[in-house]
Structure formats: C-alpha cells, structure tokens
Length: 163
Image 1 (cartoon, helix red, strand yellow):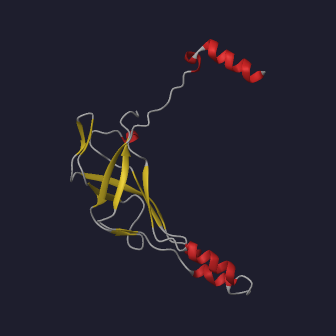
Image 2 (image 1 turned 90 degrees about the vertical axis):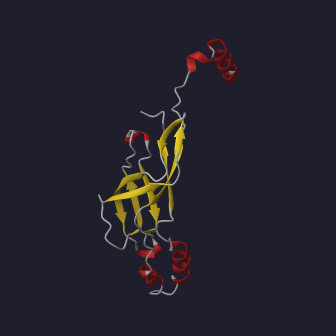
Image 3 (image 1 turned 45 degrees about the vertical axis):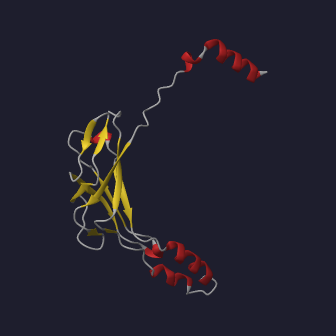
C-alpha cells in the first residue's frame, strides 16, 4: 500500500519537484612523462618542483588545452619511504600547473608506488608463525623504492566544467 501511494505521489508531482543538480563528469586525460628520472631512495624531498612533459596535444571544444612537449611543473607533495613487511614506498605529486587552466580544474594529485612485496611476505609470515621467532623475522623484508623513469606515463585529468 505504501509503495503504491509513493508511486502515485511521484506521478502526480512529476519529475520537476525532484530535480537533481548532478555535477559534470566530463574529464579529459592529459598524458605526461617526467623530464628527469627520480627515485625515492635519492634526494627527493617534499615541496620539490618536478617537471613533466606533455606526450600529446590535447584539445577540448576546438580549443588547445596543452601542446605536445609543453612543460607541466608539479610539486612533490608527500614522500613515503618503504616500510617493513614489504610495504612499498610512494611519491605523491600534486599542484600541476598548466597555462590557462585553473588549478581547481586539474586532478589534485597522482601517486606512484614502488614494488609491493607484502603479497609474498604475509603468507610467509603466517606459515612461519607456529615456529616462535621465525615469523617475526619477515618484518625485516622491506618494500620496493619508487623509481619514476622517463618512459613512465602518468595521466592526470582536466575537468573543464568545474569551477
């Protein structure tokens, strides 16, 4: 009975009374590569400016957003070193700057991870746990470092209808 009443109510009121304001889902991918190789085990620090190069010319509504080869500076937001039990290191890039585009219209950040060894370490840890000291020895296996090479392609997104 209640479902029928709600259906009639919706039918009588129409869809205008329940209009939603959906946010735009339009996003344009921008493919970038790094100018100079970096690694988490070397001198990478938070706040460091890193330059990326655009791989392709990107257009939206017959307007050129970015040309191939343009430099896109970004900032290293966070550097997380590799941890015990195979947890990988990571570097988070943010504050991408593209001429003519507001920073609110570009993705906030992009994260790159090192090799995740935890999928190997945790089963080994559980298998060795019945033997008292051996399970804890796997704690000393560290995850992989981040190495961002020139052939690594990262994709950020431009949201033209965001303000």
